[in-house]
Image 1 (cartoon, rainbow, N blue to C red):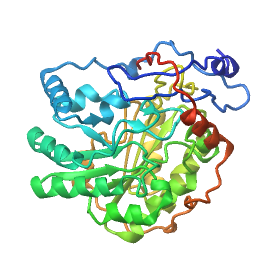
Image 2 (cartoon, one colour):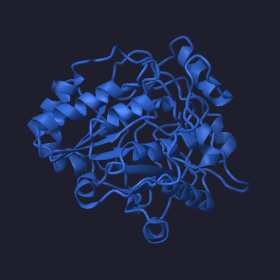
Image 3 (cartoon, one colour):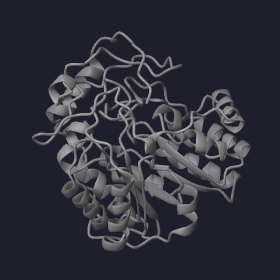
Length: 373
């Protein structure tokens, strides 16, 4: 299957299983920017043995799933089709996704629904804290969709979730995985001042692919937000992630890791891209466990990351509890000021972001079921 034939399967739209959250739109053209001679892996190709996991369904998994539904909460474990959901939920850990489950952006690799968000739920921090108490968590991970229509991007809700968890479960550490808040430092500072134990923001891909893969985001905005966090609080542990298999080269992976270290990022995770549906960009390769091990060694021994979690099934919050307890933060790096921030009322929108916004503004699309991983 060539890159050209992959682009022809553009469909009409998709709806995550069991969801009824309003207008859900197509991710747009599933284009992958490959080098000469590269081809994509067919959607139905058999996965390597190292990517096969047992389907979830144990007693603790079912208990947590019921609890999430009763509290009207969402987890990125479910929304993003995380392959580790069975392992993590059976051990009593989960990553909460706040601010709803419909995102204002249309990142081409992401299984979270893209469309018009629902009304902001101001009671959500209390319900998240209730669930953390009921689950008896020692480490809670909080992430969210993008809410670009909100002035603070949802930073105030993040800060309140952190505060409520710390107040009600004093021994529980909190990790946040934030969107970019359009580069607004006051929003980032609001979350920093709530004192999460780990502050994460994912760069996800290399600079060359950033605008194609993440319309609305900016590569240097993501890098520099992580650097600015260290200026605002030099003792804050920072973390980012790179997803492999979307057309990047080894030289670009290495350069991205170097850029993250310029921002003094402490923890890095690297994992395999798994294409959620035909509406998402194709996969260009299966990354071997040996290559992941090599990136871990390069990151820790050569580039100076405090810890690199690297493997085919690794996701941003994998083994997060251990990281919060065992790793000490380094100080600020060379990059400390936020770059490429949007200016309210005057931001220049590039063609790829404009295309994503046209999909968002178009009349409701026909909904079809999104394929599973």
